[in-house]
Image (cartoon, rainbow, N blue to C red):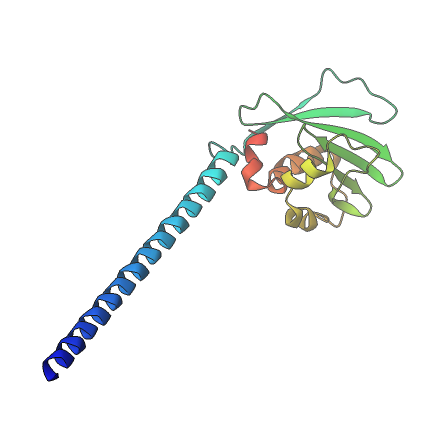
Length: 185
């Protein structure tokens, strides 16, 4: 009987060693699978970000020109176009005089904001619902909320009429979320 007990003990210890080895292999395989899955998720996120983002670097050079096709109306007296880089779709700027100063409505197909210049200073505001032509969801996606809050008061004093368009052209790209910079180019 002693011999059979020894065989049973040896078989049991061999069997438990094999089970432990199998458990280790299973854990390693699960870890590798988890790593591969995480890499796929990271790769997918990076691909989406690159696809949604701009294809080149942002060109901060801009050209301001009067909108020759614009005819003044009761709402807006003047209009300009700001083209960044070699853009074929410029941003339109419409100016109207108000009791408090001037309002400059900056509009494209994808976003719109209003820069206000007057006794209260110079800064950006969201466009009122009645003046808005861009959907609120699209406008919210394209515009950077932190920058909007930061540009509410760019200057505590009014800016001279000769500098306002330059200020708008230089501050506007900061309002656009990075992945949408290609809108301006």
